[in-house]
Image (cartoon, rainbow, N blue to C red; front, side, top):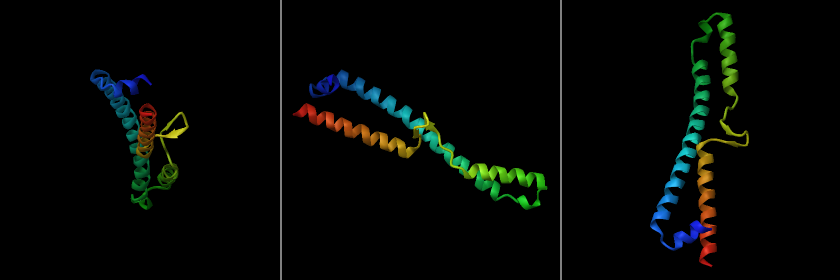
Length: 112
């Protein structure tokens, strides 16, 4: 709770250090979530692009390979953190909402 007490004491140096740390952690989390979102979208896009090719003009062996690619891309691929939580932009939004909710609770506790 020392951070909250320093905030109420208007210690600018400590406040800027904490704000910098929070921004660095948030940026790192956002980048990981954004990359996870891009990977998910690109996998879907590959399946659609393969489907839109002129596959009917290809040899039978290549058609079977394309069917395998389409089948694999139809499965949902997501980057996860420890197979617990999906890393996507929606997850990042939920993380930010939770952080601000906890911060608001801590702020209310120090006001009382």
